[in-house]
Image 1 (cartoon, rainbow, N blue to C red):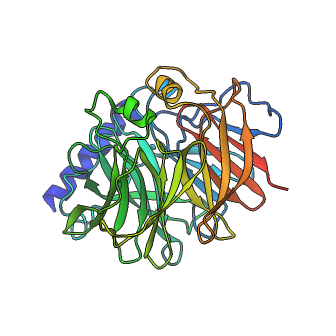
Image 2: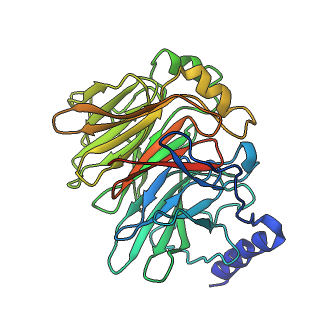
Length: 360
């Protein structure tokens, strides 16, 4: 109990010391072509829909206008308003030590940087939110998400620290209570951008279970393992091989002899997200690796290069184009597409807005 209270008090103290960033609007916020914008959220690299609602949770990486710390954002997909979800002025901690006993404690909020997201739907508006965090540690942070009230709220419940020499990108829950995480590359490798540009293997997929930690899935090595999703029965893993400009269907059993199917996409495939029709929405950058790395490593407030979204029929192993956009000063370098109703919402790793367009 004392340890629990100490962790909670330290967590709150970090916020009180002035680490809460108020929501700010980005100006101007006029539509550009067929794109409208939710202006203000910084570096929303990934988007996930809160089950049974029209709410969106958007990640927020550090860098650019976000400075050295990111956040989680809550987006109303109907009226296109937004607010900071975490860390906000009233953070909650309920450490589930039974499940996440190997976690050393809450994240450092002064360094928090939210990257990939996913959601495990629960019952009665109680879900589990998975967040890739690069701030102060390479980890998956877990939150209990409550959608029963007027607006969803989150409570931090635990974490899973990544193995050494990994840089997690995306995460997906497994039906049996575990999760799979993509490792994009070794962050200490000085030649990683060159390797990605040539399609050389740099990363892999790891599987995690409570009290067992992470294990490498054999045969999952790819170039820049990025977005990830799992079939409903847990037998298949779908991965974006960013450096290979491909999507991959991988048996969860893995193994050197396991048959994996690769489908060329022709662009740098970033995140994957399930569509209402059961296909996967595939989004990514339509420029060379070097151009993406140059902006990612810069202090630019926006990355404005070309991007593309396709639909992936995972059974037929076909891709169908949805939209292809040239970069513009307002928005570029798309990382994720999330369909809610007839609208497609689009995130980016560097920018001050989330784009959306109508599929009608």
